[in-house]
Image (cartoon, rainbow, N blue to C red; front, side, top):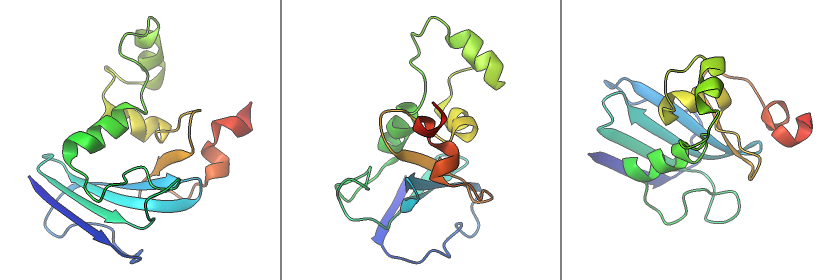
Length: 135
């Protein structure tokens, strides 16, 4: 697996030439904390850090591999043992609790923290996805 990490403020970074995949903009409210590119074959992950370790950084420690990123996405999903999970997934148009697809529908928002995921073509803000603002 190819893994790269760097600290930079180059917000023009959007893709990896010659690779198809998904760019995940990891947000803390309206602060861009990290960009994570994962190739479609899950063999390449590129991690760009914008925020230093602290409250606005979900991946402190300087390294991010595919397993750690998958666990982050999985933590943004409903529990697999939840009794009403089949009904929730059906309402969302999903056939299983696949973290890669789940976060595309929910932006990975949870009530417990302020992290969420924005994708390249979106112009949304924390105010629009914040579950606390809708209650």
